[in-house]
Picture 1: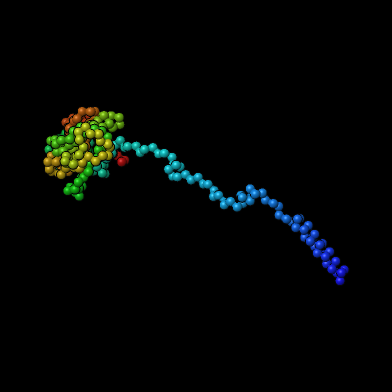
Picture 2 (picture 1 turned 60 degrees about the vertical axis):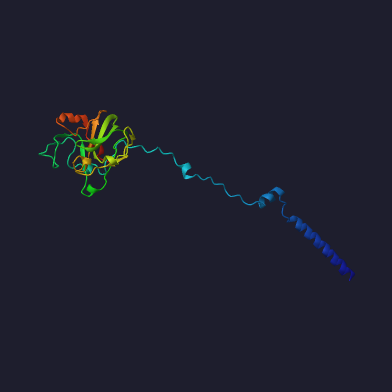
Length: 233
């Protein structure tokens, strides 16, 4: 029995030594404290730099103001009776009754049947100062504006307007395309008895000239043909 006891003790000691050796051999390496702290820190999200639309967009130049604007919607399609330079008289005029004779210094923009009893807005064709606003023979309500077209000083006549609808004051600066007023009622004092339409003429230079007709064709060179300005608009 004693021998068995000694052998058992020996086996236990030997087993302990073997376990100690194996444990040391396969023990995990120690991790520095700073690495342990890094391991347990929460992951930091990636920092993404976002550009807003305003930051990434290239600055755009301000829209350029148009130099010439139609005085009435669908301007060219309305020139059906009295274009620039047409020679008329009471006997051959495209409108009736006719009380004028000579070469037409402007363009007449006609109104439709539907527009006879509704407000038809008129707009300034260019930028410049208001010079005249009054009642005049042959026009009824008339407004004259000083402008520069193609680097040339001109005066623009807007004829047959309802003057009470024109809020702009004398010497007021007007922008191209600004609302000027509305056409006068046809065959009334607002149009001096004429049909409802816009007479537009553009006289070269700074002089105020109300002539709607001239007796000699050569004098037409003193005016621009308004319809040429609106082709392609």
